[in-house]
Image 1: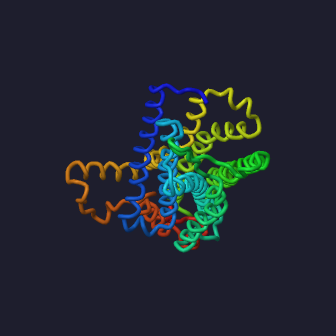
Image 2 (image 1 turned 60 degrees about the vertical axis):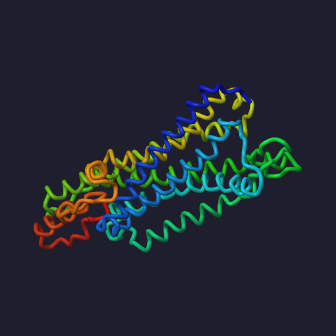
Image 3 (image 1 turned 90 degrees about the vertical axis):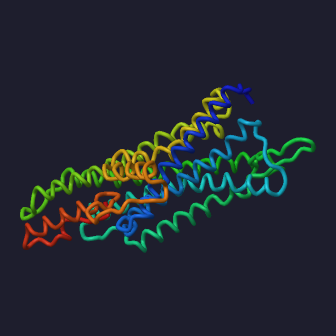
Amino acid sequence: MEKISDVTKICIIGAYVIILLFSFVGNSIIIHLVRTRKNIRKNPFNWLLVNTAVADLLDVITASAFSVPFFLCENCWISGMVGTIICKLIPYFLVVSICVSIWTLTVIAADRYLAIVCIRRRPLSSRSAVWSIIAVWLLAGLIFSGELYKFKIEEVEGETAVCYPEWHEESEEISIIFNKAEMIVKVVITYAVPLVIMAVLYSLISYFLWKHKPPGTVNQEAYAKQTRKRRAVIKMLMTAVTVFALCWLPVHVSHIMSEFHTDAYFTIPAILRWLFFWLAHANAAIHPWLFLAFSKNLRVEAKGIFTNIRKRGPFKQPKLSPSSQPSLFTNLELASSRREIARSQSSVNISTLSFDTKF
């Protein structure tokens, strides 16, 4: 193993502290807005964003807990039963949270497809959203349950314990085969397949939004306004998916190299390999701030939270009039647009316009 200087260790640990801070603050804002705002809480789509936020928080926490000890004392670990439990649980929840995050984004893509392209089908209901969230967590937990078996600790008398992965302690060949199979499964399930699905769905949505023409009896101005809002939401979600793909690509490539091209893998400097790992988990800190950057409504509400904390304290909230109630994706404006369209037509049913209030 390459020797890492103390200065480099401090910089890397500081980098993990940064993504912990940004992830905690950003994802907490998303969770807080959905939890405390009644009109947002009733929207099933917003609970999918909360699920992404929870998974991203768990991702950064477990990634930091697994990486920081390595740099502080070169892979030292807690000994005893507590150390064994932590050694198994942290890697397990790490990969589960990654899987849940990307597949929740995939469910969101499917929901947007149903809401926009499939005119005669409704998007996810509250019950469907809850079952989707439960299913994603259960399936991710089941698929990667092998992590609970694979990770073990080795205690050396007079020294600290070491947490390490090993499929079969007596046969190195079996372990190598299992490691290669595991790496393929992880890349396919947590990266390749969901990205392909989302690429197809968002391509279909984009084509529909840019090419679809409204019925002649519909108020053209209201329809154009609604389409602009939908395009803005799709751009935000596509950007989140693109950032995920770019952040995770280097580490997936390096992991595949570590199993199939070991010699080439170890030509990569150790600091660069860990930078790939850090970049992948930094995605969990970038996600919520992307949502805030793309949504004017979210930015206003987030600014209000910080202003409220500074002026009134963290436990006091200003009273909001009904017209100023926050909406994660401007539900009130969409409802207003819908009323405009309804007043402007007599023979066209609104449901045929594929309008919804889930944005």
